[in-house]
Image (tube, rainbow, N blue to C red; front, side, top):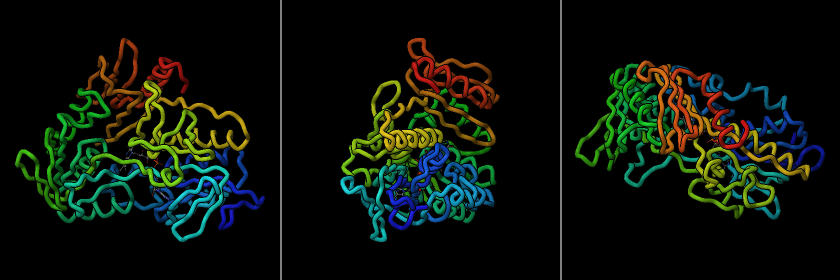
Length: 398
Ligand SMILES: Cc1cc2nc3c(=O)[nH]c(=O)nc-3n(C[C@H](O)[C@H](O)[C@H](O)COP(=O)(O)OP(=O)(O)OC[C@H]3O[C@@H](n4cnc5c(N)ncnc54)[C@H](O)[C@@H]3O)c2cc1C
């Protein structure tokens, strides 16, 4: 175990991971499972033990959102693995020359390798009143749940996956729900039009009021005004996307872009000894090579694993492996499981196998004849094979 300075019992500084979401937790677990025996510190700005963020929107109105039910690991896991989890501790700055992290209590931690797994924060456009909540943490979820229960209705600004899951959760528990989406279809960034239509359809069947082309121009905690003059009353929640957390990377002098902390194909940042993974990181896209934003659970998990292997390689002076995992994500609405692999919203030829409206279909996207992305509806098992096919087409392995 490390002491308060982040130095292990062997007297050597160890690995410090900032952020205890899935990227940070997976990296810590992988390090231990791969035989790393040095000091390992996991810092979390949130209170309590690490939990599954994805449950927050799906189980929003469920009675039990307790940390025990949605935790990522059992409480005794951390001691058993000798991972020093420090909750309610925020890292404030990184000094890459001294290899130290300054914490919000003024103390510093030494590190040999540092992983930035700091995730991101919900986007808040200037027109959004400060009273409008966003959903990122368990505390956010508990506040939103109480507000919906009190008002009896939800108005979500943003018809992406999180906005739709929130609406599904509210509607399934008998509350009025309205979704306002500025684009001409819901979830347009992540799925082809035929899947957007399916998702809008299953909401409308349950009485959710879905408005596309609905551009919000102002919002308070109880009402949204749209550019077309319409007004929508209820508990307002903004689900407009996520901005990666770049502050620590910048304090360390690491290169950043709007999409995240720039990392190479082995998750190393531009600063020696510092790695980044998950929503905070911008990896080279496997198709274009351009830095691309994270935003999905499995991507963050896969990157956490890969970052741990790169850190181990770095500590041993070996060449780090290259990250070749094809993107994957999922959503669950009204019990319908939708899996997305590769680049299903790419501009290409969309083919459908099965009955989309029946919730039993595979929708594939092809560019130049090559399979680049797929969405399975109610066919989760098929997604794995499709991902393998997409990887084979890229010349990478999954
Ligand atoms: C409500 C919701 C539902 C979602 N549902 C899905 C889904 O169904 N499918 C899917 O694929 N994806 C989903 N996602 C996205 C997915 O949850 C994220 O991609 C994933 O959680 C990213 O993991 P991460 O470890 O990179 O970051 P995070 O989970 O954001 O963890 C980062 C942690 O770092 C901490 N931190 C930040 N700065 C500091 C600091 N300076 N010091 C200490 N700690 C710090 C933060 O407080 C946070 O706890 C959902 C996201 C949300 C918000």
